[in-house]
Image (tube, rainbow, N blue to C red):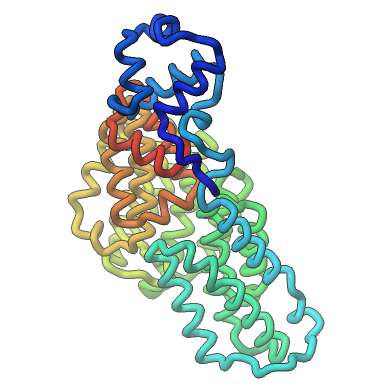
Length: 390
């Protein structure tokens, strides 16, 4: 994406003249002095507040983006779309269905398993652009290995589809994420543990569908929960069912399911990442925050968030998990009309997991919302301008 190098003050002057407004008449419409307008146009006074930029844009009858010298497409969108297109192409290959012969050596099962583990680690460190680069090859190699021997690498196949779905959810690619999650479910048929693993991502994809709650509960009921690994899966599925209930406005079901998940989490403890779930007592508390946000209860979400930050288990969670929670916390602060604290946690996300806020559409939307408040801190305004979401 290209950016117009013309300073914003010069751009204001150009658009003002084009509208045939004198500095005085322009100042009168803004409720400012002529001297203020002159300083802005000469670059002596900077424009940082979103509310001021929007007021100027309204008087000049242009979009705020025109003042900022931006193209319509935000930075990084083209690259992201190209990467998603490559993942889509890899998912659309059907070597595994037709057993098409290959003209090169298939990756060994051990190496393929290492590549999938590396993909998960990259995801959990919130390095989404790097994962976009990795996944087309990983998915293609999984397909080729399955075409050569359908009985080999079943676990690897499910895990490859799971991490693909997880990334696509982050990038706002719901339909493609559903395809990856559905592929994971299909590959897992016949194995209750693998089905539960796949169902975790399916629940994330279908968060907005109330019909998905019985699927989560059915998958949870199939798990014996005799080991910490199995309990983590059962608890994660209960959390997904609770968040689906919260999205549907069923607060009673959400609370009951999270209470049940908390009982399971107490047996697992914090500091574990069984089946890439990071499930434990702290994860359940963060889910309570997310549920409160979905239910529109900002004060409760804020209170729970601030309490959760003091838990030892917080620092043991993957970076991606912590960053995603902070986005929920920012939404909670905005629900309580507190843009200052929303800005604080969003800037923290920018520090610990830049890709979460730069490449996740939901995070970019929250940043834009925070920056639009008339009393928004200049720091969040600058971040929103840097992200090109205003």
